[in-house]
Image 1 (cartoon, helix red, strand yellow):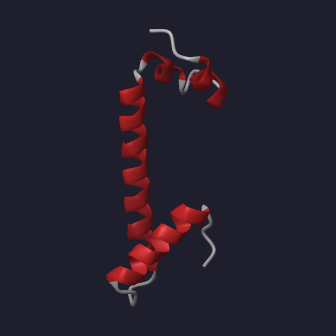
Image 2 (image 1 turned 90 degrees about the vertical axis):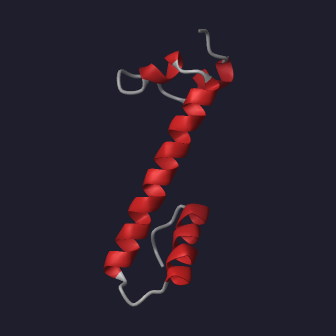
Image 3 (image 1 turned 135 degrees about the vertical axis):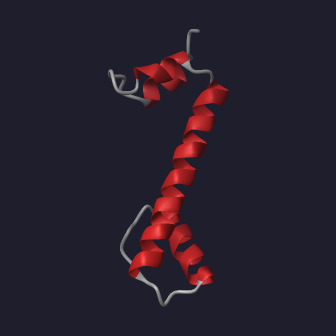
Length: 74
């Protein structure tokens, strides 16, 4: 399946991610959502481990802040 040039211009294709060109737009979105979910869980677990005194609202707020600003500094 030929992908549109907008997709081609977003990525540097190499052996590690060339498989994405074979995926449909829906499949690429599912991969992106899965990566996002995994990253969110890793950050949540990291914050819980390093800040055991934080309650769930504080953890959720910090995860959202890190995703919003792509910044790991408090």
